Image 1 (tube, rainbow, N blue to C red):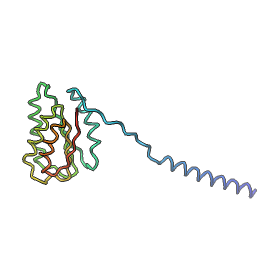
Image 2 (cartoon, rainbow, N blue to C red; image 1 turned 90 degrees about the horizontal axis):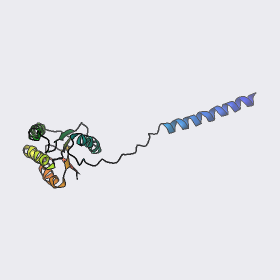
Image 3 (spheres, helix red, strand yellow; image 1 turned 90 degrees about the vertical axis):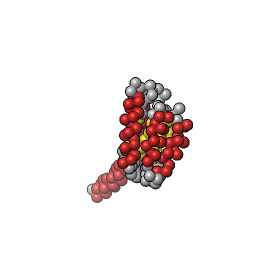
Image 4 (tube, rainbow, N blue to C red; image 1 turned 30 degrees about the vertical axis):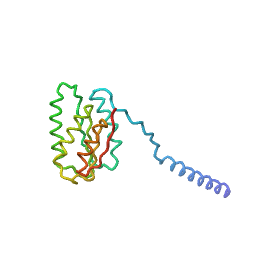
Length: 166
């Protein structure tokens, strides 16, 4: 009888150790396969651009602690483009003038890359030097517009990131 009790005790101990080992393996985080980055829309479709931004913006959020300020200017082929450009331009100027603090990101994107670059350059004209340290500016547009934007935002002390659309 003692032999049988000892054997049951040994089997119980082995089962507990095996169960603990299996439980530890289940706690490991599943490996996440990163999906490939989306290509920029080649059409002037606002919905496609919003979907594209939902892919690009999170890829550039490392170290950002707040929701990004995202500005999407539609295509110049939109019937009310001039009105939208004016309204968005005022919003961009007001937001930048109010002071953006560390841990924030400003995202500027548009199929009308040159017009968006003009808007950013204009908005940053009045920003005092060094007042936006720790802020990231993400410009999504054409390479020819990137250097203008970079030169306009650099004095504010931001970290500039460029994503090229082709």
